[in-house]
Picture 1 (cartoon, each protein chain N blue to C red):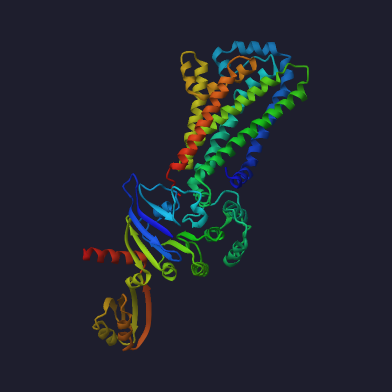
Picture 2 (picture 1 turned 60 degrees about the vertical axis):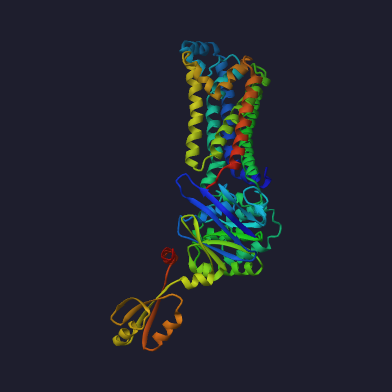
Amino acid sequence: MLTVEHLTKTFSNGKGIFDVSFTVKEGEVFGFLGPNGAGKSTTIRHIMGFMKPDKGYVKINGLDTWKEQGKVQSYVGYLPGEISFFDGMTGKTFLDFMANMQGMKDLGKRTSLIDRLQFDIHTPIRKMSKGMKQKVGIVATFMHDPAVIILDEPTSGLDPLMQKVFIEIVLEEKSRGKTFLMSSHSFPEIERTCDRAAIIKDGVIIAVKDIHELQSMQRKLFEVTFANQSDAKSFIESGLLIESHEGNRVSVAVQGNYDKFVEETAKYKIHNINIFTQNLEDIFMNYYDREATIS
Amino acid sequence: MNVTLYKQMMKVYMKSFMNYAFGSAFYIILMFWLYPSIANNTKAIDEMVASMPEGVGKAFGLNGFGSAEAFISGEYYGLILVLILSIVCVQLSTQLMAKLVDQGSMAYLLSTPTTRGKVAFTQASVLTTGLFLIMAVTSIAGLAGNAWFLGDQYEFDTSRFIQMNTAAFLLFFALGGICFLVSALSNDEKKALSISGMITFGFFSLDLLGKISEKIEWMKYISIFTLYKPGEIVNGHGNWVVTSISLSLIGLASFSLAIVLFRKRDLPL
């Protein structure tokens, strides 16, 4: 449905994206992960046809997004990373304008989206908070029922409740056979929705992985507080990867081997367990380190 | 041309078009209202102008006060109108393209089933429509002012007055085209504004300097303002047809180039 082939673009400062290739199948949710400045937005700009590739191409539904401007967009919904609207519009006038630009007749979907996201469409856009604007953007992205949906950092600015609503919307659309490409920093968001994800760094795709594989790469840090200090001592001897310990508190790093962790901790009396999830940047760092050692 | 976009843009900018148009109309009517009291003292004023250094009168198009259109051409079309419309050209062209790219709202336009060519053409049409409206309201106000304050008592050549208005419109069509080209190629709103402003102000100054002194007369030939001579039109001198065609061609070429280049360039959206 969406094909990126050998996409290369070098900017004058030497940065850019280099030989980026991946395919998103119909009905798939594809995550696009990477630190800031890695080339996520540049790739998305090419997918939307805002930039001309030096080499390679992007095709949506068989149409080249640079050459076939004006046709491709009718299949595509796009949520920009930086939301900015036109001056002097309210949410309603903006959505009406976009509906006209899309040539939309059926406004039913739009109305139901507005209901679910719960916001006042009559507020002037310049008075809206970031989250409100994001909601307007989300409605504009989905309202014309596009087959392919490109989301650039979709949940930034949304409160946790709305993030949940948003993920529900994505999953519903997915079950209706829609194709997604979603760039993100936030692993939980990708984890809950995506089937596969690509990791990009310095303009190069490092890996395209199944989401379960990525999950197993994610390291979690458990901080276990034992009832007795002696238990903590013997726990440390158990062969788990111990990050630090202090009195009866022990920090354990767990990556995939949850069984062993549960087995070991179950032997003792436990006061408390805290969990710290590793953020994406750290997963990347881990990943790069491993790559480096393999090669 | 994208009709939805055109309507939306006209809705947004109509108020400022009308502000400029009515400002301009008010001023020109004021000029007509003033004319009778000046016409009675024409001789004294002509003498005063003659006593000024020759270049100054020429630079500001002071053109004798023998007829109403000569008075208006000198007092209004020579300076005030040029300033008003230059500001409109520079500001509006920047807002119609560079601002949308700079802010990122262009991304929304281009994510709908339209082409960049159509978007640029529509925005160019909005600019042209705005300039046309301002000039049309000004011309109508001028004709109304003539009928109202001067009647048959004073000389007024309607066809030359209309020629002068057409020439003014074409000058700003050309200037608007150049500013629009700058705007279509800019990613930064402020940069677009300062470059177009510098070009416009530069043209204006070169023309002015070239007219003041014979020695640096060549300067005015770099400027497109040289193709606009309201004083000569009302006196029946000069080649109105040739300058009008040249201005139209400059305008058309700049707008077309802007559209073509906008289609091909990378947008940081």
